Amino acid sequence: MEMPGQKVRKERSSFAGEKGKGKNSSEKRGHLAGLAVGNEVDVIIDEIGKQGDGIAHAEGCTIIVPNATLQEKLKVKVEKIISATTVRAKRLGEMKKTKLFR
Image 1 (spheres, rainbow, N blue to C red):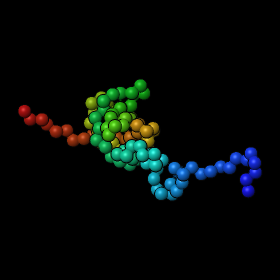
Image 2: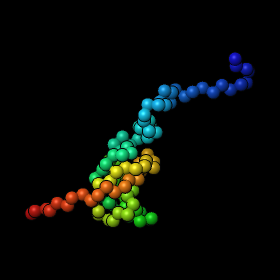
Image 3: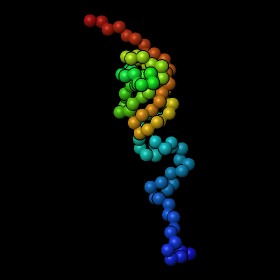
Image 4: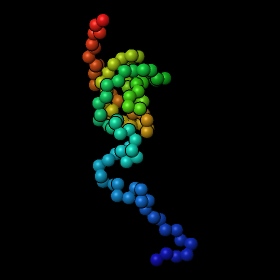
């Protein structure tokens, strides 16, 4: 029974029923649809960050790769989603280099 002046907490309908469906929080929000934890991506390191990590861009996201060098081509695996547009990945190996014939 509700008393006058008493606030009643109501469950928000946008989150109702989401618990236990096996989705991580980024999937619930609809972010990073192409980059989920465990996905493998081929990247080329575009920049080096302040702490020396390699920075690549793929599928609209920034990917941070520790111990990478500039212009290095890598296959990486997403380890952690940092924000809606940034992920941390670990190196799986270098991509095979192909020779260009002209």
